Length: 152
Image (tube, rainbow, N blue to C red):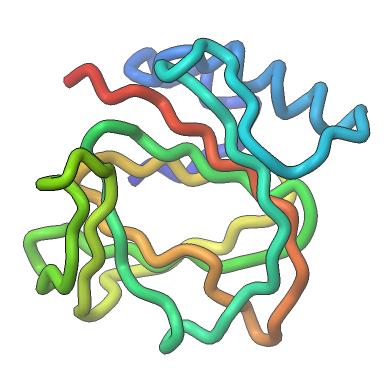
């Protein structure tokens, strides 16, 4: 997992479409875009915008993805994302074998990060993450999750 600011992601040469992601975030903040999927480069890069209430950590599951790298940023509110390496967790269900791109896990966090403002988390295949976790109290948030095709 990489934690950085949205403006600094262009410093990471292994993050495809970084400039397009920065541009999308700027445009989103200066417009009245709604929730939903926004295709930027088709299935190679798209943004999923959602609005929800954060939840207690005990109500959330770890997840990971193989087809896509996640870049997650909150444009309103604050949430925690808990992290652990996939190999330290126990898989409870998966959609990989059915063509999906998610698996769920139980286990303990190895750390967590607070997302708010312009900071973002970039999560790779081996980064199990437990998103949407409340920080202190439940909060209504607006989040953009960029799905970046994993060509590794």
